[in-house]
Image (cartoon, rainbow, N blue to C red):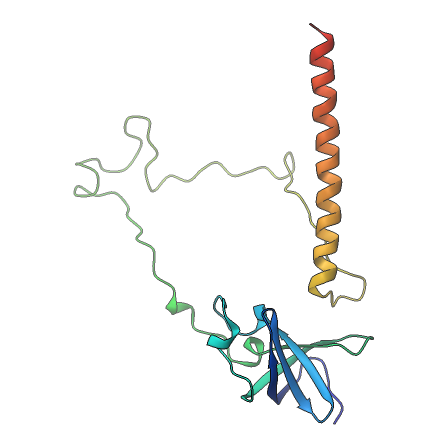
Length: 173
C-alpha cells in the first residue's frame, strides 16, 4: 500500500514516548504522532489518551525525504463542536450591575459597551514571523529554528540600540 499525504489510515500504536507515539500503518511502515496531534485538548500525559497496542485512525500530515512520516490522530477525527466552550457573560450595564449607572462613561471609567480605538496598522504594523519553508510543509523543528533565528536577530538589534542610548547618555554627563 502506498501512503498519501492527507489520507486517513488505521494503525496500531507500537510505542509511546514523552513527545509522541509511534504507529505502525503496515508491516515495516511506522510514523509518529507528536504529542500536540494526539487530541483536541491539552495533552499532559499521552498514556491518558492512548495505550500501546491500541488501534487508532491517523491522518498522514507529511512524508519526509528521510523516510519520516508525520501523523495526526486529532485531524483524523471530526472537529469538536464549539459549544463545549463556556459562554462569556456579556453584561450591557443595567441598574443591578453597577449601582444604578446606565452605561456610558461614569467617573472616567469605560463602560462595557464602549470599544477601544482601532489600531492603525499602517502606522504601527504588527511584527511578522514568517516560519514557512519553500516546500509549504514545515516540520516543527524547522519552524522553531526559524523563529529562534529571527528572535535572536531582533534581540541583537534591540540590544545594540539600547547600548547606543546608554553610551550617549553617559557622554552627556
